[in-house]
Amino acid sequence: MSENPEVTTRVERDPVTGRTTEVRTVRPRGGVTAWVVAGVVAVVAIIAVAMMTTRPASDQATADQVAAAADQARMQGQVEGAQSTLAASSAAQSYNQAAAAQTTAQAQQAAADAQSAAQRARSASDSAADAADRAATAPPVVSTPDPNAPQ
Image (cartoon, rainbow, N blue to C red; front, side, top):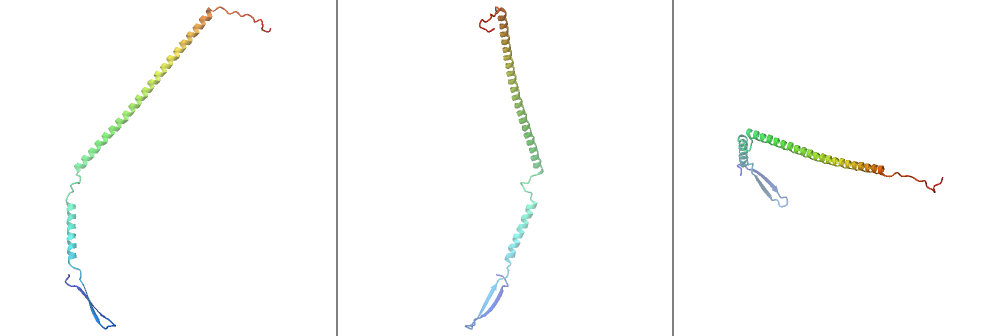
């Protein structure tokens, strides 16, 4: 308890019985213990803040580490750019090869169509020559009038 407690005395008188009662209330005043605990907590907090601000953190990056990370990121960007360019070049080459194959197929089809047309033309020419030869060697056709035809 504290050294100087607060004492309150109250006298009550009962009107029926006529008795008087004295009531004493003792309240302790604020003690020193609370102030000592608060002071210790404040000192510990001040020491902790001082240690955190003066001691360098072990996970804090140095300038060399930041530069190394930037160089690594730059190289990774260059590698990704080269891979992207290579992929685009490969895609263009594949497209060009497919277009060349399609053009070659179309040219071969056109050549086959031309050969077929030339063959048909030769065949038609041979047929026409044969017909001309037959017409030249055939006996002349003499037409006779039809006796039943009206005149």
